[in-house]
Length: 298
Image 1: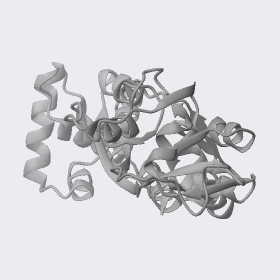
Image 2: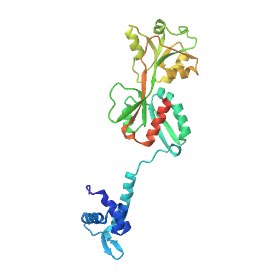
Image 3: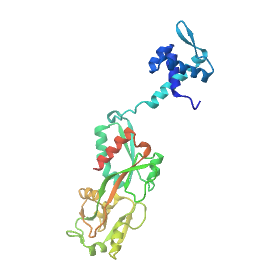
Image 4: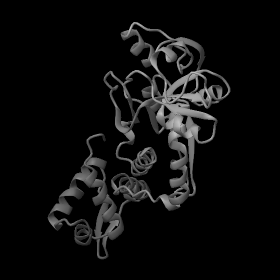
């Protein structure tokens, strides 16, 4: 049965409905000869006449009557399978989407993303989840619709797509009135200060340490924290300094007694990208959501 021509299902369905060879053919866009040939193939396939000629047209045999409902269900299934994909209507959608991101990414994206959901998709919910180092596996498992993370230097795993969201630069955050920071920070003051290191994976080192090493310098990391959003609060109540993405620093400078200053050495910025699984690439709902994430990041 694996080699059965699916067109035969359509022919059998039309014959069961029309009970007439010519009318069934016209319904399917077939000539009477082609319809008759298909009926012959069906008879050989099932080992049964299926229909007998009468003065009224074609009467189904007992075997054809047994097949009537399964054939109609098969037709409905084929129609669902090959029907054109319906567009995603955000205004009437009732579902949820999920984003895997560090607290930094969630902080940047969530407010504007929620604004768009409230405006365009009031019944759509948003779930923010922690992002794993192996976020490709999260996406493959379906634990998140998209992941937001810094650009990878290695090749993406098979089945994972990505696009850039934004570029970020590093700045320093210190409390207002810090005794070592006037208009800015010089290198000697910076290296003498106690630093906060944001280490989401718990590993030492980072871009600051690499830049200082090139100058033959080191810094003291007095506090390491796993979360980006904790560091500004620590800095606001101490003489520590943290080097962090400008978006986070500038946002906290508006609500905490902290200042944003440029680091005394040139630090490379970084690109944040959105990642998703190939199976969601053409899904209209997922396309709409990815566009919403992209807009929120802009």
